[in-house]
Image 1 (cartoon, rainbow, N blue to C red):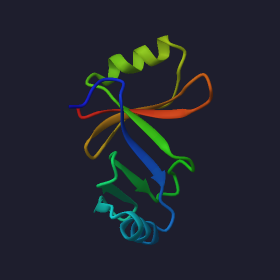
Image 2 (cartoon, rainbow, N blue to C red):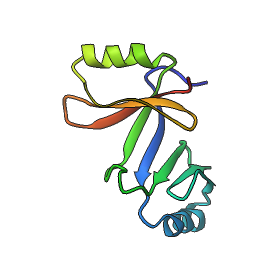
Image 3 (tube, rainbow, N blue to C red):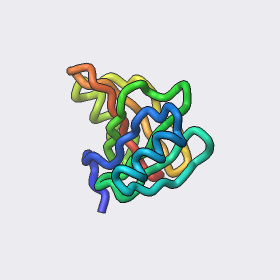
Length: 113
């Protein structure tokens, strides 16, 4: 069961998506679900995640936390000193925002609603 504030998902830069998928399938037995030509989610990896091959994708891995109430969590992040770097947006499967923590790390927070 998903819990507020827990690591839920990780996105990696995708680059050459067919080559990346082939590597992880062959080396580690991961399976993939494609969500268009620029995104593939992985399974059988111990933690859910995906590869984002869009030119707009982050050049670094993006850790994504879960919350049941996205607006409330955004307020908590701001109150704690986090800086929202990408406001709440929708995507297939839910909504999320990205923030920078005091150390400069960028993370995302996701909600299914």
